[in-house]
Image 1 (cartoon, rainbow, N blue to C red):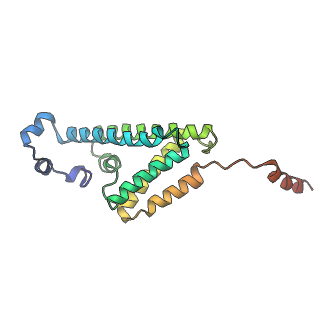
Image 2 (cartoon, helix red, strand yellow; image 1 turned 60 degrees about the horizontal axis):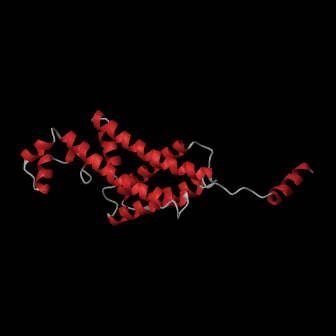
Image 3 (cartoon, helix red, strand yellow; image 1 turned 180 degrees about the vertical axis):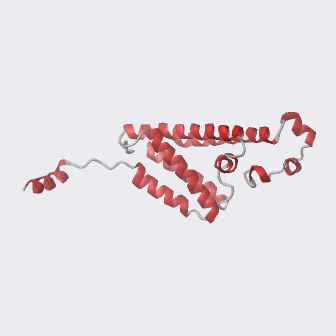
Length: 197
């Protein structure tokens, strides 16, 4: 399904590649949709662990902004290793199945919502220490971050280059996330005095 999508991944082809008889498949799954849900849940479990490793396990060594960048870099490396193929299964299926299956759409949205909350927690931590801009709520910035990231991955797949990932990271980290250090009184005072004169 990662290679071909839901519709183009036939059950018989899957069974042949897995060397599993059809009877065994239907013993565990009533339908292709139920099988897809199991795949989605399995992918989510592995991917969430990967996200958490970047955003939480490194928290003692790296700042929130550095952890978000580590997430992007780790996934950029994976995309490069796969020559910009496949991408994110949840993102792929979200695009393909949103209008085809309400059951899958709801589960995919739940997963994306959970990922957004993980990013929001890291962003909120960065806002609390003044490293990340606080002009928007953490969940709003996290929604933009996740949507932008998934869009950049989709564009990387379609262009077969990492340029969309690089653009996303540059703009997101330099313009959207990074808080500007407060100006010192000395830097502000001359301008204020000249305006008064």
